[in-house]
Structures are given as structure tokens and as C-alpha cells.
Amino acid sequence: METLVQICQVIVGCGLLNVWLLRFNKSTAYRGGTAANMLEEFAAYGLPAWSCYLVGFLKVTSAFALLAALIYPSLALPAASVVAALMAGAVAMHIKVGDTPKKSLPALCVLVLSGIIIAGHWPA
Image 1 (cartoon, rainbow, N blue to C red):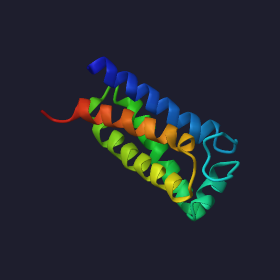
Image 2: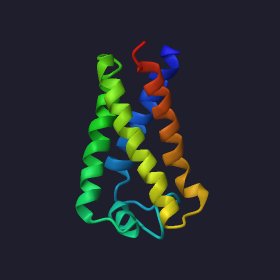
Image 3: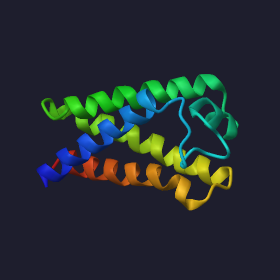
Image 4: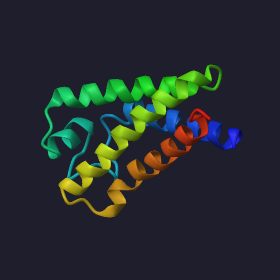
């Protein structure tokens, strides 16, 4: 189980860093509504621009914490919990704007992976 949890940490951590640092201004098939970049996606959800930067800060910080948790495991539970909450919100936003299920698939997958990390680090 420990190896599975660590693999999930790497996938979620690297995936979030990819989306928020490398693909922030790029169009993807998974952007909400008709958005071509992250700021447009948040606008499509009816959210202010500052919320994009707040969510980005939380996701990037959590991503680094999940990767650091490979060495300092006590970081994993809080980081994965933040990611899970944000991913639940992301799925809700996709539903809110009537996106196809395909567009919410990445957020749903990261939510499930975060759940695995949480379960693997839950106190006995």
C-alpha cells in the first residue's frame, strides 16, 4: 500500500505542477466552458480572477508538499486533504456550467488519487 500511495503522490504532485506552472495559459480539452486558459476558465465558472491565483497557490503549494512528503510523510495528509477539497470544488464547477463529463474527468481522477493518499496516511 505504501508504494501505491507514493506513486499517487508523485502523479498528483507532478500533475498539478504541470497544469498550474506549464499549462496555465494553454488551451486543453478539459478547460471549463469555452475557456482557452486558466483565467478564462475561472471566469467561465463565474469566479473572480483573484480566486484563480488563490487556488493556484494552494494547488502548487500542495503539489510541492506531496512531493516533499516522500521524505517527510507528515506533509502528505494535509496536502492531499487540500487537493481533495479543491478537486471536489472543481468537479462541482464543471457541473455548474454544464460541461460534459469528459471535462471533469481529470479533476475526478485527482480527487480519487488524493483519497488514496489520505487513506494511506490516515492515523491508525
